[in-house]
Amino acid sequence: MVSEFCLLIAHHSEGYAVGQIKTTLKIFNFVDQENADNGLIPKGDVRSLEILALVDTGATHLCLPSDAIAKLGLRPIREVMVETASGPHKTKTYGGSRISLMGRDATFDCIELPNSERALLGVIPLEALGIELDLHSQSLKLLPMDEHHSYLTVY
Image: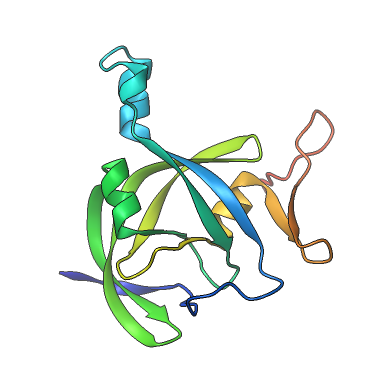
């Protein structure tokens, strides 16, 4: 059954346009990582991959191609409707992906992009990791996290 809410992801043409920011993500299967940390499986058995991702502020979530999800062995959560530039589409969300970027890491659900070879890194993971776009230099930059400043806010 398709859930009643819609998520917004962006659908891009086959080529990267000039001015787009791309980054390499290291993605782990979080369940494997926990099992290895608890001595249940060897650390070498943790499924992981590195993937080039388009940083996309038009996407809300981490979005991965089907083959990346299969290689990571992520668990399906539910079917969802997503809005793309070409209209609404039914797809699935998967749980248990842990990404590492610029020395920070966190666990996120991801959205499957069934007919894509490209990963998208949306605004929710960027904000959770404390990473922002520097459009002038077309790069990513870390927000402060030290004993005097923090990108994490609690009001």
